[in-house]
Image (cartoon, rainbow, N blue to C red):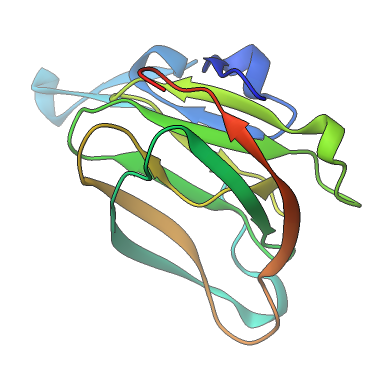
Length: 163
């Protein structure tokens, strides 16, 4: 059984970046003072082996509770960024890059105003919407080369709110 902890910059640092207003280390006034730019929130790595950036929208349906974690994936050639568009909390399940270690899996409860950017090779579960169908802005890599590995797991339960 895995219990999620709140998503924070410090706790998520081994896996990538937290994308959120309160994660910004630099805020710039732009457009003649009518806009704030929360600058450089994620290190996108998308160009390996001739890759190019893709901007997509994902629509994720919540899984039945309690959530059974049965597989993880990684993208060895690129980062992958997710940002929720509906303001609903969601779950992030990750493990360090390298050989998959089931004992190193961690779970985070992300607020509806927090996204993540997985570093290349970071193991992660697909989008885990909570409560209702949720849309996400996704920035990842398109192009040649194999960029998705999956591992099947001995299923385990993720205890989320309400499960």
